[in-house]
Amino acid sequence: MAKTVEGMQFKGTRGQIRKQKIETTGAIIVGALLTLWIIANIIESPVQFSQAAIAGLRNGLIYALIALGYTLVYGIIELINFAHGDLFMLGAVFSSFFITYWIGADQSNGFGWFAFGLCLVAVMIFGAVINVLIERFAYRKLRHAPRLSALITAVGISFILQFIGLKWNGSTPRQWPTIIPSGDIYIGEVRISLLTIQLFLIGLPLLFGLNYLVTNTKQGKAMRSVSQDKDASTLMGINVNKTIAFTFAIGGAMAGAAGLLYQQSIGTTNYNLGFQLGLIAFTSAVLGGIGNLWGAVIGGLLIGLIQGLNDGAPIGFGQAWSQTVVFAVLIIILVFKPAGILGKVTTEKV
Image (cartoon, rainbow, N blue to C red):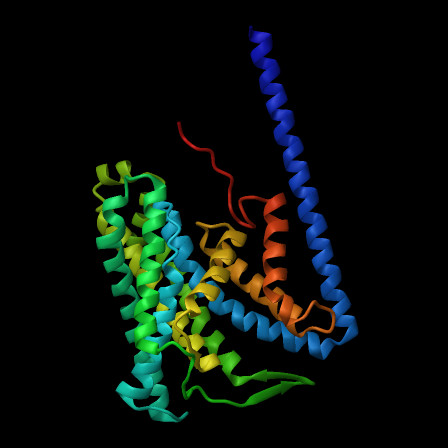
């Protein structure tokens, strides 16, 4: 009997080693193919490659901000909040009305920048409040229900937010004036828009600030504790409900900030905007390792980069195949590394 158990353990160990070798080999092959594609584009046209990469990273920053909301919520209560993309859409619509109608700024000047800063604070509060209300009245009572119930509820909340966006924004895309300074700077022959630089100057501090909050503050430690064991956290005096609500607030604030940055960079809003970008942002979170903050950031930037190179680099499938390329890369990577780039494989407790 003992030999049988030892034999099973040995077979299990061999199976794990074989699986790890397959995952490692596959990851190396995928990485090598992506590297060859990038090198071929650089050789073909360095300037065009640089322009496409910069545009892709700019979009990737917005994907990363949205993806953080997905990964925060999943990391603490293991819920895929499909309404998060539509919250981002409402943030973009809110920003448009706040700047253009409520403040009355439509030009890039001192008053316009004041309106932008005020709007950044307002839209983050707006997103946080909406997300906390969703958690309080829709998700909290389903916390111990089967996961399918919470998932269906999230889809229902998504439709509600989309309907609000339809009534608020209208059924057709709306064009809005932007107040971020336009213009370009050149590094050699490579053109970098001031808009791209400003998005990174605003977006990167938000990312690093969130990381500091989660890793170095008392509330962040409470979030990490609740994500690991809610019952033990309660015994240690942590208010689980408040901690989860705070997590939703932070995720909603990031979605609101992403909505403002998107509205100012693209200049249009649409009621179904959250479906497409929310799906890409969710893909970013999964690719990076859902539940991992830096995984969401890396996943967002990577997908933005791949999308930008496919659309604008000399060697690519073109914009018509943009979504296909993104999801094909996701599928290939997850086949060899199911937990994502920075994710860790976990086993279910029984």
